[in-house]
Image 1 (cartoon, rainbow, N blue to C red):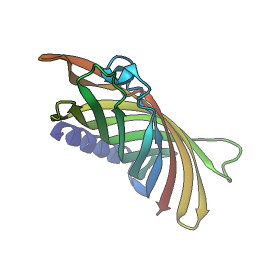
Image 2: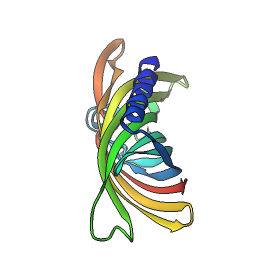
Image 3: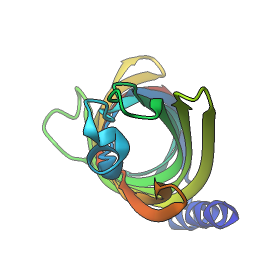
Image 4: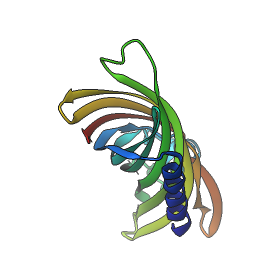
Length: 220
C-alpha cells in the first residue's frame, strides 16, 4: 500500500513538472458495469459445475482530472464493486447444503488520456488513453454442511492492474458535464484455495474484462 501511494504521488509530481501551470479540470462521480473474467471461479472451481457464475456487477467510483499539457489530462480514480454467487443445488449424496462466495474489489488507479481532435468538438469531446494502479481484494466464502456446521473464510490481498480507455464528454449545464467511458481492465490476482481437505493451492483469477461507465463531472 505504501509503495502504491508513493508511486501515485511521484506520478503526480512528474506531471506537475511537465506543466508549468497544471489546472484541476473537474471532479466527478461514475457508475456502471464491470464484467471481469473470473476464469478460475467460473470454469474450474466448485461453483463452475452449475449455473452459478460471476456475470458482472455494478461499479461506482469518484475521480479528479487535471489538465496537463495541450489536450493531455491526468485522471485519478477510486472505484468499488461487489458480486456474490451462491450454489445450493448439491446432489442428495453431498455433505453440503450450500456454498456462497462474495468478492469485493477496491481500486485506486491513475490514467493519462489525450483529447482526440475531431470535427464535432463543439458538440462533445472524445479522449483515449491508458493507466494502471492497485487493486484491493476481499473474498468471503461461506459453507453450510448438512451436519448443521458452518464455515466462513475471509481473505484479503492486493495486486497491480492496468487498463485501456476511450470516452466522450459533453458539457450539459454550466459547470456540469456528462459522458460515457469504456475501459478494458487487464490483470489478475492470486488466490489460495482448498481443492480437497487440507490441500491448498494458488490459483490465478483473471480480472480482464470491460467496464462501461456513465460519468457526471463538476467543471472548474
